[in-house]
Length: 311
Ligand SMILES: [Zn+2]
Image (cartoon, rainbow, N blue to C red):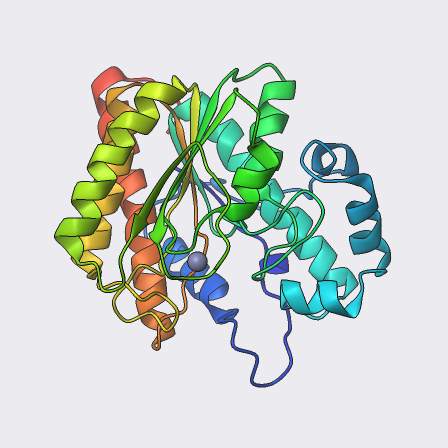
């Protein structure tokens, strides 16, 4: 399976910063040590261009991000100190999702070992999100004529508020978000379909709600491509999660989402989104099981229909 990773994903942060930047390189090591990627399939994404970003973001916002003219308040909201590297990281993270979308459209499944920056709004960033990779990638594949309709399946524990805001009124991209009702962001935007969960929700409540929501979302979306935000933060050991989902429950989540899309013939680009477990290894475990599930599903479908011709 094609997997997108860039060393640019790892941003140097001040001592004591609470964002677990180490998860990206740890995840890459796990993927590289496994046989998920064939030769040349672990890829470095390109940076998305201004033109691609402007399909999702306001020109003034892009200009302030690129030139370092964000206000202190805007920077605090984003949560990362501004630097040229931060801008490049944000472009590459979106490039990884776009790369995964293009690969998925050809092969059925692909993944970005970053992305899921769903708190980025058209004119501002927040919650460690600068550019909205899902909106940028969806509109890039549409502009290229490769997909007419896209569905965003957001299972990160935080609502996909930026994605909902950017894509509001866009009938060609359906947004679905299952999240903690009482969690950040405290003001929720309206997705095409929202599934808020109470604090402490367990595997069965989460999975039952997800299964119903997926059916409704996929039915309504009638999509040619899915972007799946496989956030690791619904995990019971997450510092910010407020839910009680086990690793096995999250593996079942991956299966439900990926098989629901496969059964409807919808290619899926998997992105990582958040993960703030007390033990960073747990976050990496959860992300890794999403990648391995996607890769094994791709292997099965390739074995069945013989789509893959090269080694
Ligand atoms: Zn999150």
